[in-house]
Length: 156
Image 1 (spheres, rainbow, N blue to C red):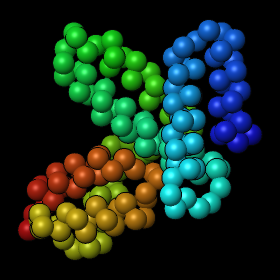
Image 2 (cartoon, one colour; image 1 turned 90 degrees about the vertical axis):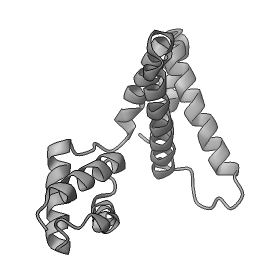
Image 3 (cartoon, rainbow, N blue to C red; image 1 turned 90 degrees about the horizontal axis):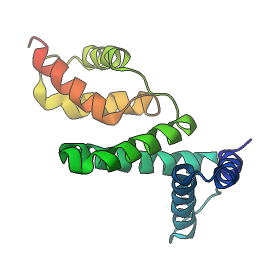
Image 4 (cartoon, helix red, strand yellow; image 1 turned 180 degrees about the horizontal axis):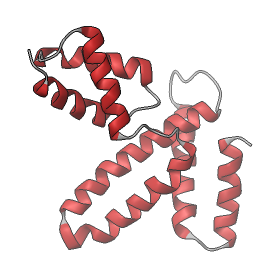
């Protein structure tokens, strides 16, 4: 079953169950896919790869917004919870990311392979190396943070 088919089934079920959270987030993804499909220069098909790309982009935006709402304290709590739920709901259609320990191991290996231990100016090369070889497996923000930590902690 394709992601599109799964989302259609989920939407149908959400409407029957009168579940506005599921219904709304699925409709938002459908809207984002429609925008991408009709965008100037779009070539290709509406397939699982496009859906994953759209879901990943949407989840990333909602996670950033969630953080901002959490920083607003009690006033933003309800919206932060809603956005956290959306990100969690959509995560099942995204590839599983490596945890912090496994990502740190990749970063350490890249630093060793490139021979840039202690060279803070080499962070872009290390990040590029990790992202190029493990793009779908790692979170870019986590890689960025871990590279900075490891290069700062590495002896020169």
